[in-house]
Structure formats: structure tokens, C-alpha cells
Length: 350
Image 1 (tube, rainbow, N blue to C red):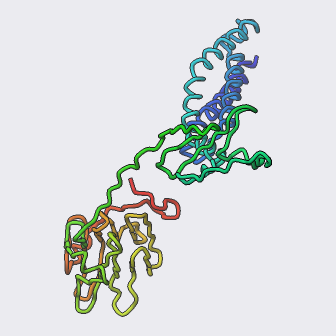
Image 2: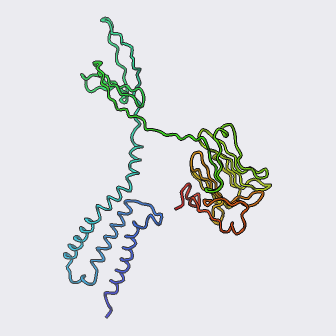
């Protein structure tokens, strides 16, 4: 006689695998770059619950011992316990995840509030109409104007503001002003000014201090190597800008930075940047050039720099001029950014 439990065991195995996949999908969606969708996740839970009830229904241990009514009551009981245990945590997590998106949508959906009508502090007295003249008819205004009425017999209300931090003066129809002081003092803003600007070749290497006054009228070249000037400094307001060129012999500089523009003339070399740093890496993923704005008036440059008299290694540990091959092999810079840059633009490395 054939064993009738074998098809049931096979079905239970298949349903268990499907159940496991449906259960793991919501938790592995982020790691697999799958879209997060509330209804898709809810569908997974519903299908998974139905399969779980089916597995309980045909389980050989009690499939023949319990009646349909008993199995149905047990399924409902387990389902109620499951929903009661997981409903609130799931909804709370979903609400927290979508809180930022909902706030953005709500803000964009609100109509812009028009600026209140401005009125000079000293208004000219209005001429009273004579007995033979009819009273001037009030102009029709849109609902968003500063004049509001609250009924047939209620007085007009005019709100006058004279700036972002001024007091709001509300004038009722009987010319009695009510002042509402909702202004707030502007937050303190600190603006740093420097008398001396700094350039570092290597974060803890060669540090050059240059008076800001010398760079107000033009560029200053603090380093000169046999006619080669790798860096020129200038000030724009209170921000230090530089023109840095990596020596390329008779050819154009392989890497060149001028103010906020840069050029990389090396095929296969990736680069990444943000407002405070610029980095170039070779095809092996090793940084060969790093520019870091440590302060508005302090810029540090790390990297591997050829020069007319030899190789210069500049990094967080200092600077080596005329570096040997062994020094070059031992020299390593820690990447600032993630790569490839097209996938992680401006994102710092972990």
C-alpha cells in the first residue's frame, strides 16, 4: 500500500519554502534594492497567512483527529494572536518611515500665503462725503486680501505689516487699532574673518602662512621649483581660493584646479567631490590627489606629485620631497569618498 502522507509532506515542503520567501521579502527588500510598497508587503503577509492556515489544515499529526470546525477555530485563534502581536509594531514602523515623505507632500500641497498689504505708518485722513454725495462703493477684493468681514454688521478688519520683523497692526472698522507683536529677533549670525590664510602641502606637512592683505589684489605663488609654481593663492572676500597644477613636464598638467573648477586629464581615473573636498583615484581605487577645505582660509592638499627635481609625497603624516621607490610603495592615502562617483556623488566613505 502506498503511503498517503508522502504527497502531503511534499506539499508542506513546497509551501514552507514559499512561506519563507514571502516572509523574508519585506526584510530583504532594502538589501536587494527592491521597491518599498505598503500594498505589496500587505499582499505578502496575506498570502503567507493563507498558506500558513493551509499548512496547519493538512498537517498529518492532526489532520484526521480534528474536525473542520475545530481546525477552523484554531486557525482563527492563531490568526487573531498573530495580528494582535504584530499589527501595532508594523504600522508604527511604516508611519515613521513615511513621515518625512508625507510632510514634504503636505508642504507642497499648501497654497502660498500672499504677503499682507503694506501701508505707510502715517495714513492721510480720508475726506468725509458731503450730504449731496453718495458714499463711495468699496472695491471688491479677493478672499486673500488683508480686509476681512465677519457678517453683515461686523466691522472691517485691516492688517498692516511693515516688514518681516515688524509688528502687525490690526485696525477695526471703528478705527481702534489692536497691535499684535508676533515678531521674533533674527538669530545671531557669526561670520569669521581671517588676517592670515594657510596652505598645507600634506595635512601635517609643509604649512605656508600668507597675509590676507597680500592676496586681495591678485594671486600669490608661495612655492617655486625651477620656474614651476605648483600653487597660486588668492582671496575672494573671506574665502581662500587656489590655482593648483600637478607637474606634467612638457605636456599639460594631468590634474589642475582653479578656484572651484578642476580638470583631470588622466584616462580611467575617477573623481568625486563636494563643497569641502575634491579627490582623484587611479584605476586601482587608490587616491593620488586630495584637496580639503579645512576652514574658509585654510586648504590642505594630499597626494603623489611629480616635480622637476623628483617625487613629492604629501599626506596626513607629513611631506616627503625627493621620495624613493620604497617610500612610494609604502605611501597610502585613505579614500575620502565612495566610488564609483556616478553612483555615490559627494558621499563620504565609511
